Image 1: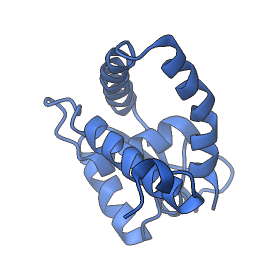
Image 2: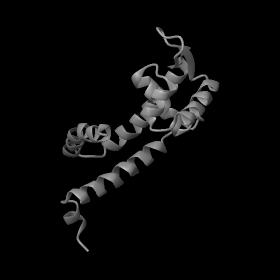
Image 3: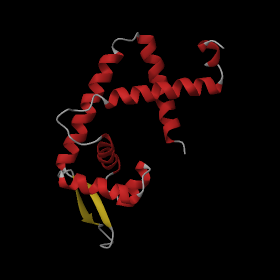
Image 4: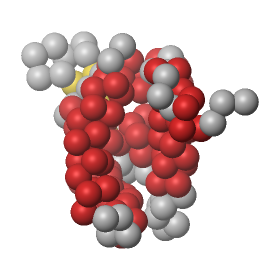
Length: 149
């Protein structure tokens, strides 16, 4: 069996290591969810998409979150009940319904992001300056990989 160091030198080995590390980090960040926030990770992801992109249709949200429109409709319905989103007619085409992030929804996104960022910032302080520099250089590359279709 090849050593871990040798495996990571191949593209497949690097892919395997990155996949595992990113999945574990995501899982760990997910556990830093605010215990007072009853919304699921999926619902928070929908709020995050609205926070980043502004008003969107249910279909656009479904495409961004890579789910089917009926599933997204259920998420939007639940978020509407929570007061996190409202539906509004499109500015120029009243037949189109847009999903809009409310102040309550925005507050939940900001609080959730703050909590997770604080957790990660604490972990980063345990690294050496050189290790943090490596992560600074890697962050845009990881984002590029995530954005690639």
